[in-house]
Image 1 (tube, rainbow, N blue to C red):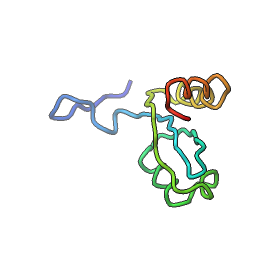
Image 2: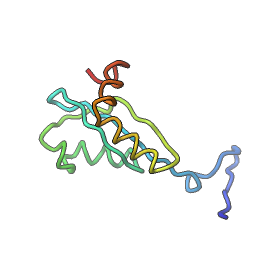
Image 3: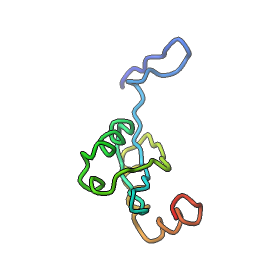
Length: 98
C-alpha cells in the first residue's frame, strides 16, 4: 500500500492524486473534438500549437468542458460514450455542444 503525503492545508500532495480528464473542444469548423488525457493543461497546449493531428487543421480550438476521473478506465469509457450517438445526444441536450 502506498503512503499519501498530506500538505500543510490538509490536502493530499499533487503527486499522490492522479486524475484523468475527458475534455471537449470546439474547433474552428464549429464541430466538437473529444479527447482523454492525464495532463489537461499540456494536452490543450499541444492542441493549440497544432501538435495534435486530429485538430491541427481545425485551429483555433476552445476548451468548452472537461470531466475529471480518478480511474483511467472510467475516463476512457466516458470518452467512448461521448463519441457514441447517445453520448452526443446527451451533450446536445445539456447544451455542451451545438
